Length: 600
Ligand SMILES: [Zn+2]
Figure 1 (cartoon, rainbow, N blue to C red):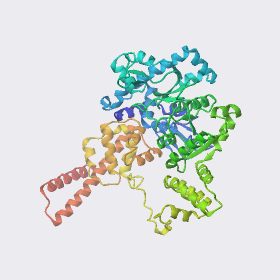
Figure 2: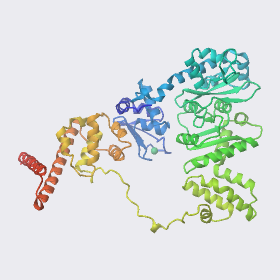
Figure 3: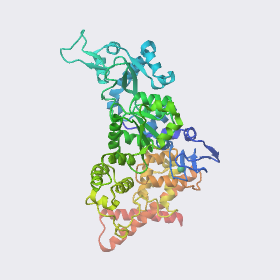
Figure 4: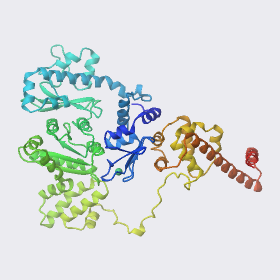
C-alpha cells in the first residue's frame, strides 16, 4: 500500500474534533477554553489531563503523555498509525488516499476480501436454513446475538456448494483456490468433471477477521462426529496464522479500553467466553502462540493470561507457549498461566463459578517465572546438589531466551534462590564473559541527551521565530524568499530546525499547531517543537505573530551577515579575497549601510 500523503494527514488533524474523539472515551469537563479530565494513561484522582481544541492537542501534566488526535487513538485505542488515520477518515466520511497505491499489491487483494465477505454471508444464510446446524448451535448454547457478533455460519455437507456458487469462471476458481476455500484435485483425480472441491464441508464456520474487520480466513468445527474436529483455512495472501488471533477484532470492538487479554486454545472457547461476559478472550488458530502474536498483543495490553486444560495435552501446550513467550518477557509486561480444573473448559468454569470468581483466577494465575520454576522443579530433586545442578542446566537455555533487562535480573534472582547460589555467581556461570557490574566510577560520564536545541535562551531570536511558527503555522507563507534566504547562513542554535520548519510550512501550508507537531514527530527537533507548543506563550494574534516572525528573521539575517562580514574582513588581512568573496563582501556592506541609514 502506498504512503498516506501528508496533506491528507494535515487535513484530518485540522478537521477532526479532538474534544469529540477524546470526549467519547474520557469524561471531559470544560475549563475555560480547554477541557480537563482524569488522565486515561495514569492513575489519578485530580485531573491533570488537558485537551485544547484550539491547538487540537492533549497533554497530561501528571505523566507527560501528549499528542494530537492521531497520537491519542494510537496510545489510547492501541491503533497502528494507518488504523488511526482510517478511523478518523471514516468518521469524517473521507477515503484515505495512498500515494502510488494503485500498483501496490494490496489492490490486487481487494477482490479476495470481497469474495471472503460474500462467502461468509453465504455461510450465515446456510446456518439460518439448516435445521441440524441450528440444533447443534442451540445445544452448544450460542445465542443469536453471539452468532451475529461473530458472524458464525455453516458450510453445507457438500463437495461443491461453494465451488458451484462462487466458482463460475476460471478466474473465480483461482480466487477460491487462492483463499483456500476450494482445493484442486491431483491430476487424474477429476471427479464428475470437476477439478476442485470445497475445503469446508458440514462444519460450523467461524470467520477470522483482521484488525479492520475484513474476513481473511475461516475456522471450521465439525458438526457432531468427524475428523479433523477443527479445520482452518491454510496460509494465504490474506491470512498468516502466526500473526492473527481469532476474536481480536471482536474484542477491540466490544471494548474501548483494554487492560488484559485472555488467550484460549479454540475459537469455540473464545466465542463462549465473550458470551459469558469475558469479552477479551482470543484464540490462536491451529498453531502455538508465536512471538509475533505476543508482540501484537503487548502493543494492546500490558497483561496476557494463557488458559490451558489441566490435562497432559494442556500442559504440553502451555510449555510450548512459555517457550514462545520468553523472548517477549520484560518489565512492564505480565504473562500468566491459568490451568483449568479437570473436566472444565473456560466457558463451563465461568458458568459454574461466575464471572467475578473466574476473573479472580485470571488475576492470581501463575506468573511466567513461577510457572517456569514449577515445571523445572517437577523434574529435579532439589534437596540434592545433583538435582539443583540439573535444574540449573535445564533452566539456563530458557533463561537465555529472555532479553537482557530488569525482568531477566529478577528471574535470575528467583532461579538462584532455587539453585542455592548467589545471583551473581549463577549469572557468571550462565553468561560466561559477562563481567560483574562495573563500579559506579568506571561508568562513562552521563552525556546530556542529544537533541536539536531551540535557541540558547528563552528569548533567542531563533526561538521567538519558531514559537510563532508553531503556534501560527499559517504565517509561514507570508515570509518572502529574501527573508528566508537571509537566515540561510545563520549558525545560531536551532537555526537548522527553523529553516526546515519554514521550508516545510511554505511548501505545505498548515493551519493548526498539531499539524506541525505531527509532521515533525519523527524528525529531529520534533520533541522540542512539542515542548514549545505545550508551554503557555503570551502571543498576539496571527497578523501580529507574522510581523514578529519577520522581525526576528530580519535580525537573524543581519546577525549572520555581520558575522560573515567579520570573517571576510579577517581573511582579507592575511590573504587576498577571491572574486566571489569580494563580491559577497561588497554586497553585505551595502546591505548593512542601507539598514544603518534606515534605522539611523
Ligand atoms: Zn497522565
